[in-house]
Image (tube, rainbow, N blue to C red):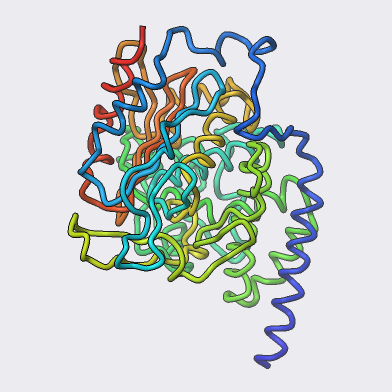
Length: 403
């Protein structure tokens, strides 16, 4: 029976791969490498900064804010669609000398991220909805496994509420059984009634289970058939859901962003050729002691959504810039997502604000900010940098560099 299960699972995974490749043919986005010059002549004013930014001064301000305060850091700035960083775009170590082979951190070094992964998840969900003529007010329950029995109040919830952390979901854990209980066990109706924002990873765990069903019901009935057949075996279904979430994240978000290695982007350590052993990826450090050995990333296949994206600063910045320029979702939809904080944490005041920011904090800390005309992401591989808690460290550097 076990051998037959494995054979069936391999067949289903193979079909998933074929279906994803077929679905991707619908996407007509162009590919532009981040290092290629981009003409601004055909862009509307929303894509060009309405201010003058000294990018060298901004980059220096970022480096000065964190120099000596991180084990390792990488950053990338996009301004008027041009990529910029000083030197290598990094500070400190991705892997300290004690964790041979040593590797300096930089804009091009990949590491595991925490909650800034939610930005990509929100964009993926919005992309699927928009390309299929649906709005953010589409109801969640339509895209659940058919053997889940959603609570009557859950049936009223929309993607808009979910991505805004206003769905009133009750969290029991981050596994398949926990998510099923969340859907079936009722919601906090008071939070929903008052539109209360209660930040919780549960809101971004759920898309991990919805994306494949969205594709199946909105784009490709063969995917839906495959999913329903797999519902008889929870382990097989979990594998297929995880595979599809990652596959459509690559195809619908990172491919139209123009990433050279879009098909490799993952929720575990990887290089230009594919997955690599966890011990060969980035290291996380808890203190500034250079003699402290680091810890390895975790695999986030089954928890992808709220965190765990493994990517470099320059690759993620390229995706953020592509989103801001309407290459993934429309500019109108992106404007709505910023104003309603869907995939964002704050609308920050500033000289040319509001500035829209998303942070992340676990064993790493990171901050991404869309200033409008300028996008930046800063990532570190330690939890003591104050990066995640203090967006002002970056916004102050930005304001000081603008006229």
